[in-house]
Length: 391
Image (cartoon, rainbow, N blue to C red; front, side, top):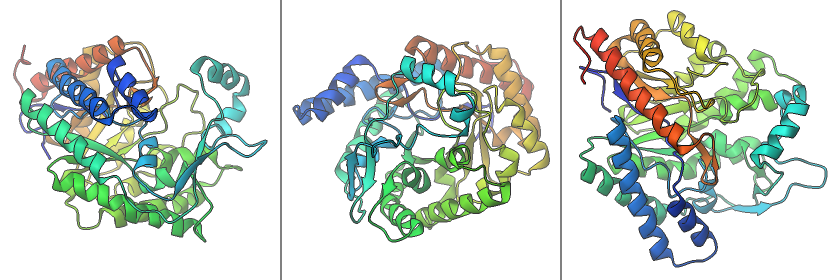
């Protein structure tokens, strides 16, 4: 994994807004269209989006997750044992609940209408879980590798969903216990994790649900109770990552991508030691939005283990305001002061598109934010290394 040895490197979380041609290809694929033409359209778009990332100043890009319908929804096509169903009468989909929603019910009723949210289909586990997605995964490898070569990129990453996040977004009707279900997912997803690392990419494990679930539990758990809940999910992830080199893995943690109040998020300080137990060389965590920007202070009290990298979000998907590069630089410098400049890579809070057909900001704003990220990293680099920032 690259480090910021002579300047602050830049990256992001993974999911980028899909252009119209990708959306057309994904719709065609879902409707049984010609697979070859759909795949070719996605490959062309991946080559373009990698070049776009390089052009705005991103050092460690990905494929925008262009082949995926969602950051966890994609596993519906890669794991056997699931079927799609509507929620039972009187129940909401597993994502449309929570104490934050209860506290701000009027806001969420309006928000769901404007955002197009609904109590749609939910994946339900009805049989043994096996990994069946290797052909699709290899196609992703080929697309990203070709795009990186064309753009002259040294390193790229591929996101993959964590076992706990997959488990908590899907109901179990097959396995005898919650843990049997969780660890079956971990054993299946290990094949994807290992393949990404062996193919030469950096694996990013996305695990928002391991902290989001705190809001969804009724009644509110104590911190000790929730830490016990988290520990089991982290144990499952570590089982899936066992034997893989930590310096090829980064772990992304966030409190969900929706534009809500987030008053019931569990504080980072209550769980940071558990996060650092994950066998990952880099930790990517929300640090820019209004609910979590203050948590840089956690790193005043928590020592980043030797050899680890921190990827703080210094731009946010959570607002249309484009961060000023000077603010980005100040945020980077704060983290560099706390954990060491060589241990910081500048990142984003979360993905700009939670799903292929659902974006958080307008594409023009996304690219402006990524450029501000790179511009701020150049300013910070000039000050941290005692030289004028590159033009």
